[in-house]
Image (cartoon, rainbow, N blue to C red; front, side, top):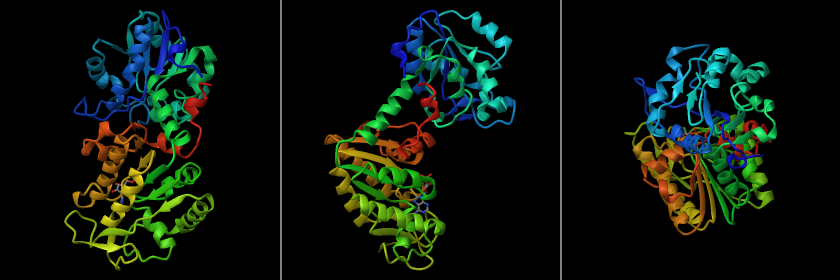
Length: 394
Ligand code: AMP
């Protein structure tokens, strides 16, 4: 697989798939993280004498929908890139190809939202073939959609030979950083997995059992494990149809010698609200009609110690309902412990919207080794799945 430094872009047209699915309010971009993340790739190609043709999806339109046009993000790209770019209101066809032909080295063109075509998400071969006509070289830098076999993220690559396709800088950095924690981590390796439900992370947990020394389960999913052990969990969130899976995971952990850690106490509440009455109780003593909304102080102490003694740390998912200040302490404590471990030389990987939000809220962005921009794609990598967007470049 080639990266940008293996390819000479001089006088070449590079068709670059980026993830510019950014939030927009009142016609302006409210979070430009994803645009910023693509800049190193765009600038590398331009500095190398190439032309950049950008393509992305935005939202989930059903056919052409002006409200989801990519035109609105042009000013934000121009601001970040520090130069004017061009926009065309289509993604394939003669008009697009004519425009591309007229572009000079150093110029940038943004194509219209790929999902205006239903063929994009269907991974349609003919649509991908049409897209491929838009460039001499294909670059995939859309890490956020690399787990999808869509026309522009994977199928289009079939129309370029190995010397004319490459992974972009963001993709390269994300994949390397995640693999470093997952496959080459110095021991002891600890994963902290939280979030609402076990069902969305079963494959992740199962794969991590082959990779880690300590697996810490927090958040809503912990109650399914505790119920599987026969604990009373009151009104806490639970997935009864996953109790057998939880049992199987605990059995596997034992067999593989993985230290699986569940919360030993909780902050419980009499309702799902920030102004609820709260109590701290042991994990097996949640009364009926109360629900656990955060891990308790004993759990925080126990897992902080494990995290601080780790050399590699992977964190995905909050320890409680951190959106309510009253139940954010567990999640914040995990962030702090990871910050401390990192300062002492550990390698830490944090990913997933909620964990990243917690790190940002605490101002710990610079105290963890790597923050992944990926959501679903990160979970797929942690689950050990192959990414179509990456495989297609091989
Ligand atoms: P996920 O998207 O699976 O990572 O789940 C994130 C969500 O899990 C957040 O919105 C949290 O509020 C929620 N969550 C975490 N702990 C609990 C809990 N004990 N009860 C209910 N929801 C929870």
